[in-house]
Length: 135
Image (cartoon, rainbow, N blue to C red):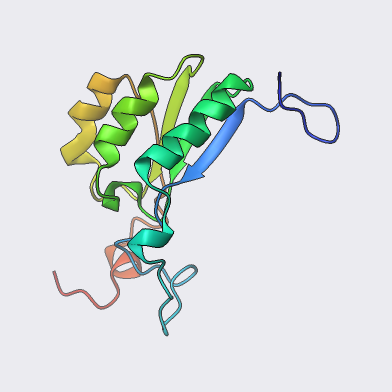
C-alpha cells in the first residue's frame, strides 16, 4: 500500500520532529517572552516514534528527515537513529540541525550510514547568531 496525496502523487518522505527544544534563541522562532515547552512525558517515546516510522516505511516511505527543535538535544537520539537504520525499506535518513552538536556525533552518524545533514545556518555573523553572548 503506497501513500498518495489528494492529487495522486506518491508520498515517500516523512519529516519527524523528535523534540521541540533548541539550544539557540533565534528571534524568528524564539520570542523574547519564551515558549511553553512540552514536558518529557508529552513527547513520544523512542519506541513510539520507531513504531510510527515502521508503519510509514511499510506504506512506502523510503526517506525520513529527523528535525526538531534541535534533534541532538533529545536524550537517546543516537540509539533511536541506530534503530531507525534497521527498518526495512528505509533508504535514506537525513537530519536537519543547527550544527552546534553535530561535530561530536559525526563519526557515529557516518557509521550508521547517515549521509545527509542539513545545517540551518541563518548567518555567518556571530553577533547576529549570539547577540548577547560575549564568548
